[in-house]
Length: 396
Image (cartoon, rainbow, N blue to C red):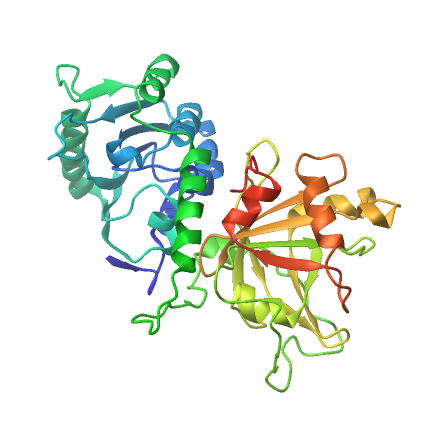
């Protein structure tokens, strides 16, 4: 089938579904670029695949410094073997994008334009062809794809080198790759300069895509229950007039988390935020993924946006917030902080910080300085501002 991302489906969701199918014992990834954003999105599933006896191998390009040191370092922890393919000729780039799962009698692969990045797997405009085969057809295609992999991992090739910790350090010292924080700061500054240019007429707009249909394993997740006495959706369209949240530059949301007794994982948001930051409506599906301070990530959680008639807010269940059932601070001056990053139209990464955690003080101070409102303070910020608050934030 042709995967017309993000209009029809996301290749990242297809890949996760295939990894979870228990039909395959080897994953091969051959991509031009890899970034932490892509590796982190799929790392829980790669870990599970390998723990169940699967083998993971990769060939990654490093042209134009688009692949980062951090992504390769993380892949070293996940994969059985990694090769770097690079030509010193500026007129040649390694530009392949192939994801291939093979089993004793099965084969699944996707070949197209999708790099191992969050954009490539989930949010960019991408086209790829994915194919699932079994029996003799699978054997033949596995053999063909194995030949391609051998081409780019040939020990006699002057362009192919096996990656280990020592060679990774040579790549960064030689300027072949850079650390992600350097790259993100440069991109944030470039975006800030671009925003300072005032165009009389914008020639293009931007699109927000609704949540796509989800694979079965995500539908099995238990969604937050709506209020028993009320419908989960309002009877009338909600009219919002607010300048607090802008649809421009809305990558990050920072906010204080209210106390919720033993239901802390049901985090409340204003309708304003639902419409203008999440760009969703009550009843929509949403994918969320927790990131810990260590950089480790949890599995993707499928949730449903639930409208509460009682307080006219919406609820989104975040599994990581359940720790607040027993750890909510008695001192309300040190309420927990929630950081959300929009990866694409319906995938969001989140972190929960407590007093004493790195990054907490600066964000808490900023939020408490905001004008008081009906809800606890929140703010939507761009990446440059996020860097100024916590330049080493793993979620960035």
